[in-house]
Image 1 (cartoon, rainbow, N blue to C red):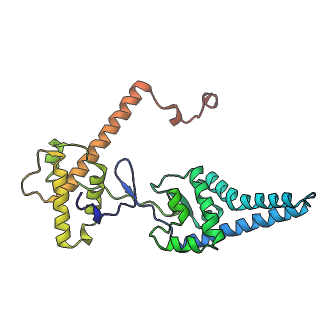
Image 2 (tube, rainbow, N blue to C red):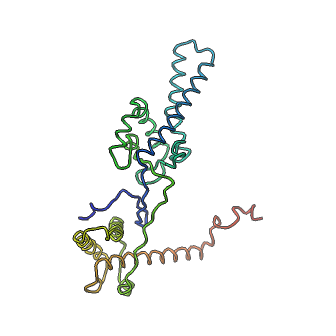
Image 3 (cartoon, helix red, strand yellow):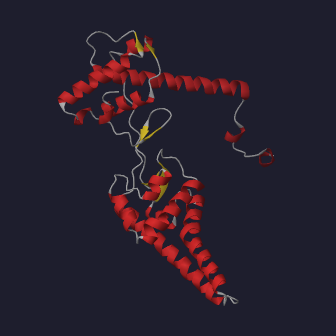
Length: 280
């Protein structure tokens, strides 16, 4: 689409083409959570050093070096990887400040992502005293460090509520036309573009608003037959088309649920009792 560049595509788009804004954590929050995590690692290192010093039989230099390496790997890699894997993208520092690491598509991270971030952190955080991570995070809008770029992740504010846009409302004068029209499923990118345009019409310059509305109107008409009544305002047509598509999707899902319940019965997982033994 020619006008796609004016829209923010950084958000998470659901399967119903509803964009959810997962706010990225700013650099100050990331620095504070990082300090907490650094303290955790330092504590693990001190405990490890204490344990190594109390163990006997470490007169052998090679054995002592192996113990030091094991403690270092445990503190710098195993501890953060274990936290982010078990706590689903969170460390103690992120828990304290309400942050969480997610994939670039806003999904939960896996063990692989945690390992990549931890290994990169050894270089950009510990070997460079955090200078590389600080420069990288300050150079992009999502405050991503090099480990985030390598793993395809970023850190979000867990305690921020997701903002789901209000669905567009159909124009009463165009609703009869929309109910009888053949409206095909719109591509996700086009649906998101129309949603964003309708939500931001008040902040656009008149010329940009008219040009963008006309472009989206032309794109949407390729999925609608017959065309709307002559002289219908493009913005009202766009809102009515999205509202009608949403109404039809809701009805389709309701019919599918009713058909499933009719032939398969109620889902046992939805019942009050979690097992036949419990209900007995």
